[in-house]
Image 1 (cartoon, rainbow, N blue to C red):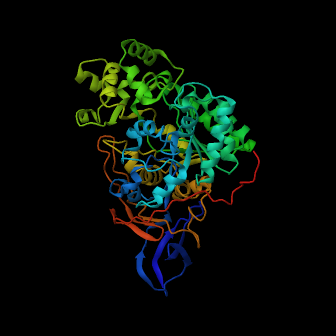
Image 2 (image 1 turned 60 degrees about the horizontal axis):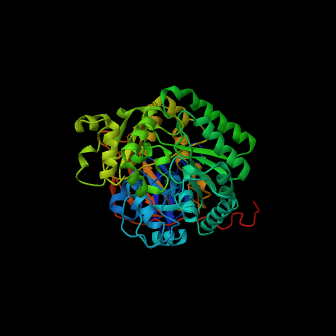
Image 3 (image 1 turned 45 degrees about the horizontal axis):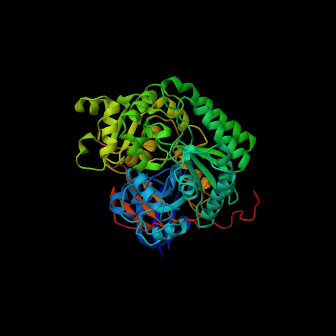
Length: 535
């Protein structure tokens, strides 16, 4: 007897093969049988007539590293079909740390990852064990964060690393890979990663490449100098042998629109050269990150505490204002997109809760000050614990990325306040808006980008496809009714049309309701990959 039989559904197996009509039998968390099971019995049978049956979605860019331990908050990921997430993004995450660097990162990441109190871990192994012992709704896998490693070696110093320091960082990356990480991440606009040079990136990437890990990177510039920034990480992959995955690929600003297609061509050319390149992308024309990312790089040396002290000085404020108006040498969101396109999504205190959902021009007008002065005031009052949303592009451009074969769907969802709608709507938006309504993709293509392709990127064993012997992570939805309901104005709206979500064989969501099931597992790097390779 099976634990569960899914009958009469249209199976989209995650490979981009055409759908096939068949039954699926699940036992002990595994897909035990695919075929005609009409004469078989099960503890429960789901009739999936006219529904799509697919592998569970794998989100390759999230910030759930802490709040995954709070299922009542984190449940929205399961409700949109996500059964596996990749933590440790942008080079700024929760492990490895030391007793000295832990307070720095707790303060630095509060606005991005939330707050669950004390961190009872230092190493990646200890963090993954903490997740093992927590009740999590979906599966979790992890990247070694560049910033955390760099801080262990040289603090938040705003300088180039020495060769000895680079070697120490590489050693820490290798240690993290041995402890179960599937790759390395960096965010080259965030401190302390922003201070690294290409030689440093090459050296640490060799540590990931030795274990067939990927390099998941927020490139150094996503606007005026986006092509140069992409060239940099492609060359890092070329010289280190690492597999390259570009995070939340975009080119911001109307004046840079032509660079988007040029960037896609450069990734294709890198593949032709033999460099394994992929990218993820969310299906929206606005991005979201920490608000203090609008400040120039020189402000970030020393970490958040030092940033806040410097921000109190009138001379520093004057220099920042000048940079915001004129400096295009860094990812200047104000210069590229304008204050009116920067909306605050969450703050840390009740005092300033009124700013959530308002753009910086509105806030400045209500405070009767310039937008830059409103920025300084809020960052100081909130100890920099603010997130923002930035409108950067148009749908025609992102459709070109969604249709590209190297694209993988990723949400980059951030919890808290009035978040970007991608937190609640990414996967149903692709399936409803881009597949059904706009015919930008076939359903088979979209499912591969959410399942088989990310599983290949992360080298996940027996995940991401509907095959006998694979883990029973499964989504069942109605292709005619699935849609995202979250908007920029009202982002906390759950999606429609997802009938069932199964995590490791257990029914976790039914007809839009989370069932409280915490069947998620920590997925560590498979040790079978090339530990003996010399790089």
